Picture 1 (cartoon, rainbow, N blue to C red):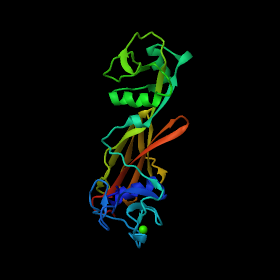
Picture 2 (tube, rainbow, N blue to C red):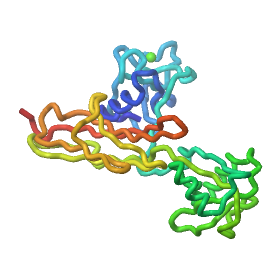
Picture 3 (cartoon, rainbow, N blue to C red):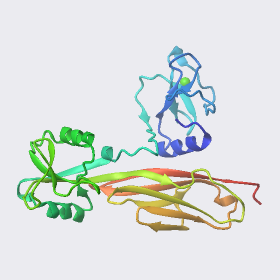
Picture 4 (cartoon, rainbow, N blue to C red):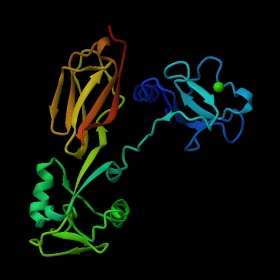
Length: 279
Ligand SMILES: [Ca+2]
């Protein structure tokens, strides 16, 4: 739901100019355009000649039909790409997990299982809620795994396992199958998404993200790595000194992890504007 120019620029960047669905349309009344959360379009970015409602059938909202970043109304049943928006306050790491099951000869004591996963830049599978358990069991039901070690997080008990679909605590030394988990970058946070900066001053923006392994976080502008940034574990701080016109614009923060040979990426944005006219 790109409700302003800045968000629209971000979606245009993520979609790389490919045709994608946005979360809006006029499904509930011709020309009454609204976002999927029910808000009316306060701002719009229609392409020339759009919305056209061609053949009276176009009620869904597309970006990049003919012009990058511009909108078109399109038949809802057409198959094109899409961009998902994740509320930044919501944590859904489970959806980003990849699992590797170690059973049979790999069966191990609890602490050995934990260390085994960590050496592979992963962690013993984390189960904190009943929903986590249900989702894991539904993924694993093809495995016929009756018992395996799990990680109950900082506040849970050590040496927990799932035995016959129930979470229990057992003998830490008993050799048992286990599941290692890698988690794609998530919970990305940008300290200031729309800073307004006075010319000549210094300004920093921090970007951080979680994941297992911890993602590498870097800032880019116009597709190029920004040299002035402090990279740390799971975060990077953009350092802008003596701000000039050239420093304004859209900065992209990318958090990247390599999981099972693939790069998993999440992006955040900071749109830097001038607080007053720059020389
Ligand atoms: Ca159209």
